[in-house]
Length: 319
Image: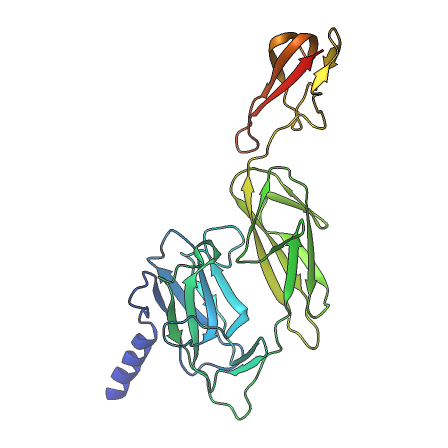
């Protein structure tokens, strides 16, 4: 009977919430002790997750007191968020798969010896906020020779020449032309995929199909005999497009009596309306000038969730 009570207490302890005093997020999951060095899975749920940002779940060596860990296993990192491209929603049943050993930078970590665990923190949207930082210790079965995974491949990606990473998103506007370029340290084959319908991907060209919300592109390295495969999620924030009149440029001055033809459609195909004041008159998209200063105002309507209204003013002097 005593053995049954002991087992029941042990199971309950593995499923007890573990959280830092200041953190709001509650962690419930297990097992957390005596894990296999390969193939282990921790089943967990999170509750009371703050709405102001997502979370990262990371396998790390415990950091110094008051400092975030610096030795972490990028291959098993999870992004917990309601945003597109996240590994899990905050309300999901989450599967976290730590390993008994990993390589972080130039350091080989053996979690059968080093104090490893699950480190929870806010994601890139509130990266400097430490209030959700918490460390949940995890132990592994001792082994004569620790099984150490290959170092994770390192992916470098740019969009329109700007470096983008999971924690450093880029902003693109509606229908903005964008090209992604990615390489891996291993020199392995790279594959790209759009993780949300808000962004179309054709080869390496990205086209935002809306001007609100966000999308994400996954960049995956197949790895090789020296580096483990890896995937980087590149978040893209979407913004309304800016309407313009294309390549048209109004002259600073024009000969009296001469007519100036104006564009009829904006870059997004909206019909442009013109109004004039001063020494000129406008009819549809044609302006006739008198001597003196003329002001021409071009307008076009906005489109919800796509682009802003057009409102441009030109000043031309008739001579």
